[in-house]
Image (cartoon, rainbow, N blue to C red; front, side, top):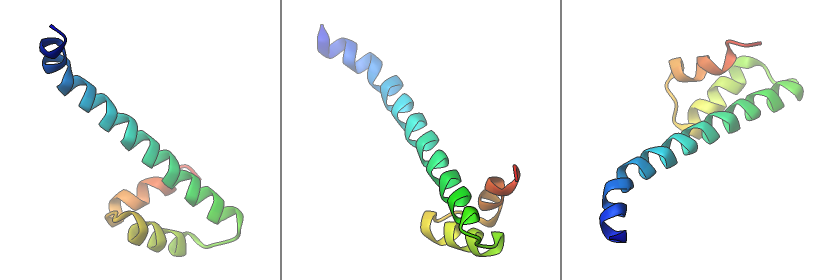
Length: 68
């Protein structure tokens, strides 16, 4: 019975885990942006760094600069 329940629930569990992972990554990237700003780095420098470090597109990186 346990195996049948796990077979049914596994896709939901994986989706939940993926959503939590993505939320954590976004929070971490935003923290990086905020910290580098606090240290006086320019937005262009920060954008280039997070694009390289997190393999983001320019559009994805710009989303982290919308709430200055």
